[in-house]
Image (cartoon, rainbow, N blue to C red; front, side):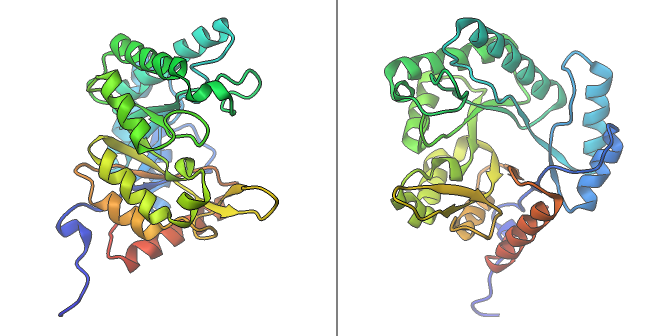
Length: 293
């Protein structure tokens, strides 16, 4: 029929959508089946240690059997903690998380670059945009990759609104400076929306991110932003569909990537909120002729 939308899988690929599950079990087979029951084709990595070979293999086998991709292993510690002892401890932890991602075949291990804030591990600080911060991040990423030597996974950073990388150009500078094939991009567009312009023109910002960073994107986060009106700019994370992020652009760009990158729901409070967010994303996908794996 003339004018009919063509599903993106014809020229690209279906999107793998995932999120946390609330089933109380430590059994990988039960967890994998629960993801599929919820309509998820991607997952956060279950708890495991990289040297627990039997459990790692059990996780990989169980999720592969259900055709659920393990999208990411989260690290979520401050690699630039002002306290040297804590920084060294955190780097050892991230090294272990990257080793787990490699062992289980996750798409990536993800952290933020860190913060020089001495009180909040991800908090704002004037030094977070300094040359010292940039150079230390390059050194940290190289060190992690060179120690683990991953071949099946990537090490990635999330953008943050108040530290590097805070947008696609800063991320490109890091990619060039780090100069490692195992360094890639984890795309969280909400983290990069740090101004009214990016908030109101989120579709344009999303398209810029994917245009500049697309070849390196290996996993993504799904959430939404609303503006709380007060005497200064205040964005809050909300369930997808309750905010202003342009999911039509997000899903279209994601489906066109040269390689498959899962989209993972995060930071919601209840199973009902995750269900609401999932329904919204799937409805937007139907509206723009994007399919899901």
